[in-house]
Length: 381
Image 1 (cartoon, rainbow, N blue to C red):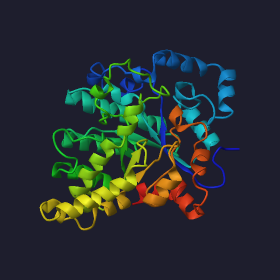
Image 2: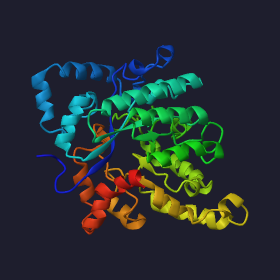
Image 3: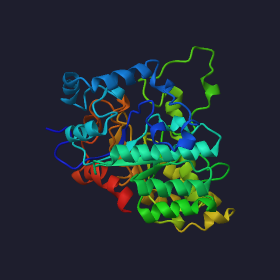
Image 4: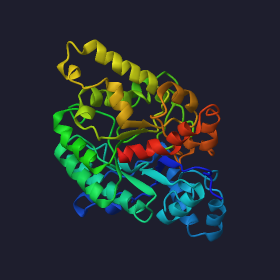
């Protein structure tokens, strides 16, 4: 019996746990030696050993059978069944019971996104997107999410075209400026047009060069604390509070610069950045529109309030630890989606139960939107 029962459930957030050469093995020879090594410090001091143990476990039939019996509540990280092997992921998805599952990288972006060399940034992007497409190639339920930085619009468009042609079904872009310009700059319009025409959503996700709390705020005269779960994002208390800042800034630029107005079929997702902030963000966005229509021609030209563009185009995943029911009641049933974060521990061992505890008075239509239709809206448009 699968974990998800009684309804169609799509999972808007899962991950592959990369091995050391996962990205570099897919790189063009000219770029392979220039990639950064896979940076595992965010995975904890024993991350390298965890990879070794996971690879060894795959050769141990008894150990593999033991963790395959109950995937959702079993080991997490590299130790999880289906974390690093695509054939195992297919069997794990059978046990989880999700009808579709977005698959993001965990550490792969660390091999190229920190580089200032554009050849490395885009060569690494190409390699990672090949690796992701290969991981998801043999199971139609898996939707591989490519990673493409927007610093150079022409090269970004080239990599997006290759990623789509190669099998990636969504594109993760950093929730930050596109090099030295806004993501709403006209130079980026060919990118948003291409994604719109292809029915491929853009994704914002914690990590992947997304700005976080400035490090100086962590210098408080005390030893730096460890991550609360040892997860891939290496989040601490102050980071959690600031998680929503980057997507709010990015989406504000997209909406107020008219991107969603110019590209009405563009869709996107904000994944693993929480959702409790969304209702107030939409109110503030409309307040900005009302307050600056007379002084800002770009804002005045919008065909409707910017919150309406977000409601049409963007979907958000609450954390399993948030009060998702209250968020839906306040923000609207069309905005939010289920996610498991498998195999990261942050998703908890029973995410459906976590969400359902706050859904007591929500009808089946609202639940169906959360578990299925809002996910589908990102792709159907």
